[in-house]
Length: 322
Ligand code: SF4
Ligand code: MG
Image 1 (cartoon, rainbow, N blue to C red):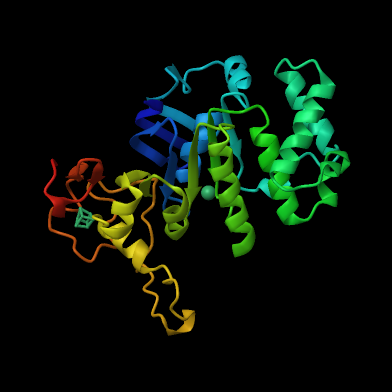
Image 2: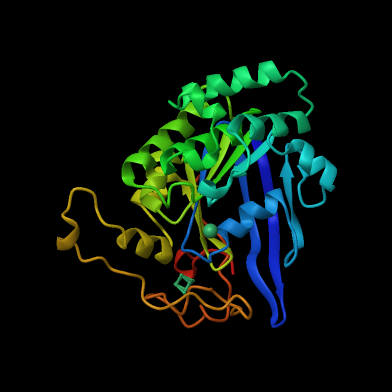
């Protein structure tokens, strides 16, 4: 069953030069019980996409399409309603989680403010829950009495995860939560997210990252974005082992392979730069960097073509609809 159904969503930034088409006709669903990975280089629209689900404020503008979350359209929901579902139904661990906690308050006060705003009245009970959750993520219950600045980076990351999930949101969005962390802390964060799912604290996760190798470890399905568009979507195993879009293939080729000495590997970066989203070309947005571009690629936009039952990619080489 789909928990989130995004249909032809367009979210732009309004600038003096025109609209930056950051999310331009994106469709996907997130099912109950799955970790849905969103990958792509920085600037591909993945952060804009997930942040638009939570809060849109200028210069971000919703230009079209829907995002049905448990049947309600997040794009037209009023502010009061979105505040109400925040943390209890839909929650986000922000990209800069390290700085996400109010530095002037103790962790237990941050949590109490949040719980009270969502109708909780029993402070004892909330603090008990906080201590339990801190223990779950292997933090001392004493952390409740501390200020965010008293915590190390890794501890603060875990405390932020506790705060974001305290009220058992159905859908948790994790935006580049591991990119500032060392490999060991990354692993801890991934384990914690799995644990939150197993314990039924969250039902589904959207995990956003530029690191496809990381999605291999956590995601059930992956959506790859390029220049505001979905270029490939499918089960993790298929997307990683049999990538169908030239961009996904290049992205995977640019990853250091496990077990091979880093220096010995020739990492093939992807040549060229992403196109400007102020005036994107009519056709395939990847054609300026694509080694296989056909004559029609700059002019005709490729539609998503079926690769297998659940696997789609938008490339003319796959012979999909134009
Ligand atoms: Fe390359 Fe053309 Fe496919 Fe785009 S549609 S990825 S330019 S071959
Ligand atoms: Mg980002």
